[in-house]
Length: 256
Ligand SMILES: [Zn+2]
Image: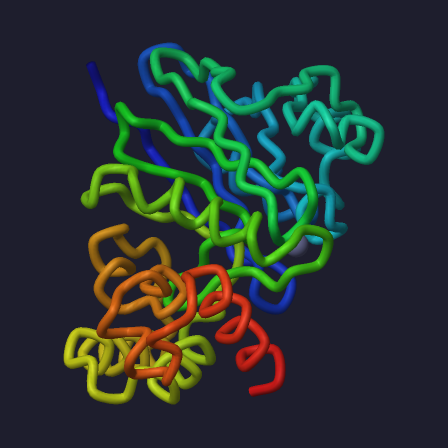
């Protein structure tokens, strides 16, 4: 079986759109098309026909290109069953446990609410890749713009259980700014210091810091550590439960 080929297309200020291509079948999925033209151009440049559009949530910078991509390729659109009315051409409403087949590769749908009320992620176990939209960022997580802190913490815990080698494909290049905040709450974390240095160098060279692996995030991302006693101690919340710690850290980031 040939691998799943993944291309990252930087668009707008800091968005990433992804093309996922199964060479055996020729099927190609596009994840969260913020815009259409650069995505259509990237697909045509390598002779790929976009057969699927996988949407994580209906913010404009994740769905803005759908109309034109559907018109260009006749792609079928997938999104949360609870967001179908908000996603153009979304005939395939999906939820936790459903799967989406892209050629020989199966994506399992994960409900990961928090950033929005019905945010979903797509986990391609066979390709060790998860497309998380605006739920988990490298060294950060999405703002709470429709869901609760409890929902987001539960969603992060769900993502945390995926195999550590899983590559985390998020929808924004926010890593540098996230590193600054992460170091402000967890300054003595050597893994985080190393990752922050590496990200700074990558960005200075114009390289993407995404994807990271879940293993890196588990060591470095403060939002994934809210239930760890040593992290609670660092942030002065030893006697609080994980949701409270998460809510506090998320608020500090909002005002950073
Ligand atoms: Zn969003």
